[in-house]
Length: 516
Image (cartoon, rainbow, N blue to C red; front, side, top):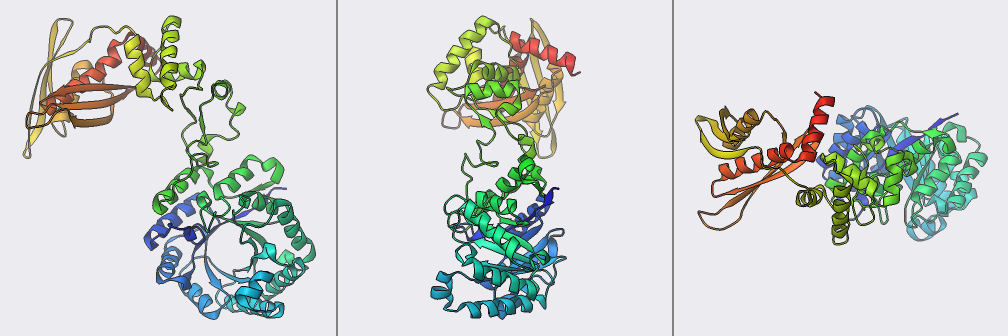
């Protein structure tokens, strides 16, 4: 039977404790809304007693975000619990999360309390929190370094006091998966009233074991995992939400557990957190790193093109990405090279392909990654190109703040002159619409850039455009002291590339036949 694991997201509380990751209440609310779209079960909005900003953030989230349970953290003190309850008062579903350290080192040096005092305070805190909410979570801080017998006592006592969830934190990332699994298994077997509460885990990553420890806990009975997006948090961070969720999804056969997370929202959520916190995700980060679905090795690329599962255990679409990427570099093989050229609209003969592939390998030795523009430049140097189909004869535009922008353009083709006019949002747009009418081609303008080639009032400007048509992208350039003329030249240059290069023209024809 597949168990349903509760995902408790603490990005906005523990995640924000990451140095430099401070968030405003408005930013926290934006992330909370994305977490709701992601489908997490619990959102820990903050630690209300810590600052007015945290209290405000929890209030805003409690009022605006529906669906997940909204939680707030509190020490086992009346003032903390009162502040948490106040911040959560408007929540549709609320949880007060109280904590108290239990390990010998914390009892001796931080709290200066004996086991009996800790036990009494924990029970009191849970009962006090129950006055405000029926959903109360208790965390014995530094549980992984607490004597198992005493930990069992605390867990049993707080459940009797009314705790509905008991969280077992590996606060300093000290635990080893086998040891942590044994700790959770011992709680499940030796705490007499364990059936009345959910056992949760909250693991830190000081030894890089937060995710393995969390998964070991799930395998041994834990029903909730506390985690953060991108694994951010205090010191080395927390267990990574995306890694836990995708492990349970991909290895459902092993863990026999699932979550309610919409995994297609993972990438968007990860990028939002990275943007708002300013903490960049490392490229090789599992699931959400830039390289997670990028392949450069020729052997891997060849296998992937033959059958995706040879080198990918999950689909990029599962986490919200469009597709995998074949990165062209010095390790890439011919199969990936041909695939990329086909996507750009080129179909080469064997001789042309051999020559182009040799040029590609020479370039790949000089730079880390070869981009589409590099390939186009290589092929335009190597392949025979027919004379431009269309030439610009003249361009005339009218524009003004009270005049409808209009362009009149004359082109020549095969010795004949063609002329037409069109209106647009501006003079450049009008030019492009006119060229479309004359060439009977309506590509998508993907990019437009303008830069000065020289200085002074009579400076020459260069316009570069990128057009896309039926899956093919081309770049065109044009230069003139008149920006409008340069814009028209660049657009026409790109159109001619779509129509005039034999390999592209034949490819376009086939695409047109297949996709009228």
